[in-house]
Image 1 (cartoon, rainbow, N blue to C red):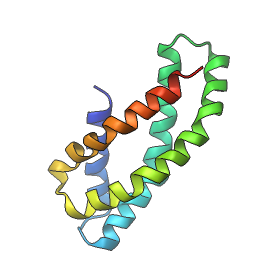
Image 2: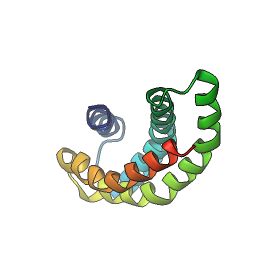
Image 3: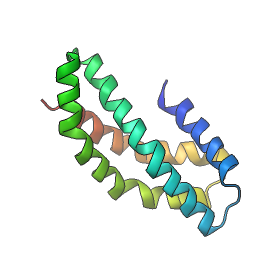
Image 4: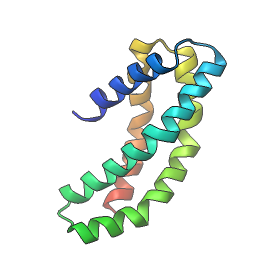
Length: 117
């Protein structure tokens, strides 16, 4: 309910900010995606997971500090090549579907990371 509309809207914003479909454009979109969207979305995911798990504000902040950097570094191992290929080869209307296929594995990792005490 959250990720689909947010990511789909983000891809439309990226296409508006950086129009085109060349290799250079795909890399620019990936840099914007991984430099701005991924860090903020990851922080939101970890915060919401902590709230849903009933953590206090202090416990949630400590959990985010414990997990954020490691999760972000793991993100940077997986998503940049996926996103360059996605932005270069896949039309806008199909990008969300491609990302959601990879996100199955990514979300399993994030769930494990966020729910590990």
